[in-house]
Image (cartoon, rainbow, N blue to C red; front, side, top):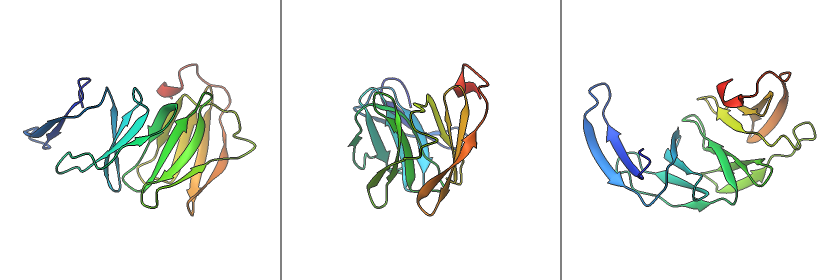
Length: 156
């Protein structure tokens, strides 16, 4: 994915260019999830699912205040930090259900960093600490946090 909105499908390990497509999208990050590819366009506050074979846009989801999103190949759930003081939302791409994660220990974290393990079971949210959450039957359990360990949570 280039900053111009052009995406390239490249074979591995030969790195042969198979397909390119210009999308009407700003700079975005790209994640793989169970249903294909997911572009995370923070500039336009949208999630854009793509068909990995054709690079066609399946649909667009506008999410007000989108700051971070994470997905994994092992899950249909997309984790999103959105809002003025970002709150954690779970979006089930299969059922299209959106759930706001509420836990008194996690309230008001306002994470700057969000990541999920490839199996989709462990979620990490960073501010100055790293918060660990675990998926269990389509809900999240808050497992705790590290002490304040860094001023650059993305580097943890």
